[in-house]
Image 1 (spheres, helix red, strand yellow):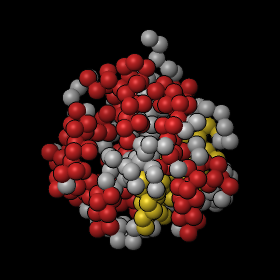
Image 2 (cartoon, one colour):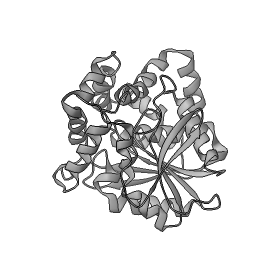
Image 3 (cartoon, helix red, strand yellow):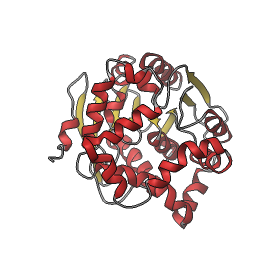
Image 4 (cartoon, helix red, strand yellow):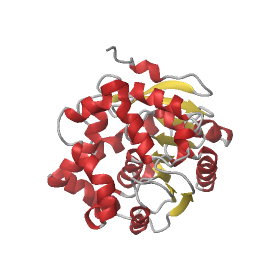
Length: 311
């Protein structure tokens, strides 16, 4: 079976596709808004098994609000380079810090979903001078997530089986690409609220994601995020990372959470206030784990208003 070329994720729309060289790799972005350093910058970071297309609803809205906006294919995804290493928290934060500088900016608002949100937390704590605010969709602070898995049986049952299954070699990669990426559709349906899979756009979203996960090396790269997060807990680099994360974020933080999210539970989101005392919380009725796609108008409005207030 022929694997899709990375360039197939460069869909046409009210955005410009660019390649940015930062932190030793080539990063693909879809960009909207004024391309000048004096415009405020917003960087959008997708979650597991996704790519920049996750932010198709938000890209035009941020441009209309006067922001220069970059929806990123994270390391190993879409049309960004897929190096064999670098899927640790330190390097991923370095990718985004390098991207901000390479685009000619000194600061940015970061917005991330799930794994992309964890990169937001890491960049804000490891490169604090570059980050003015962070917006998160179903992405608790990494220590809050670890504590919830250890202490909350419901959160442990929701997250741990799949997370542990991803730790074995090769089999998870094969599952993600088998049957034209059918596993990605299964995950979307299992973790979303009931309305999104019946919407007009869902079949199109599924088709694009099922294709993108079959790009050479993408499935392996996606799983390497999960594998480092688990294996590093037993190594010095992981302990150093968690120590670095154990500090309070003093910038504005907005947490958007779908009320029906079966994967990241409300109590886990609430734990993050220990590391972000000023965290604002926006609950989205009827939405699951993909609130920015399931309820795009409501979530986009909340994110844009947050970014404007944080300038």
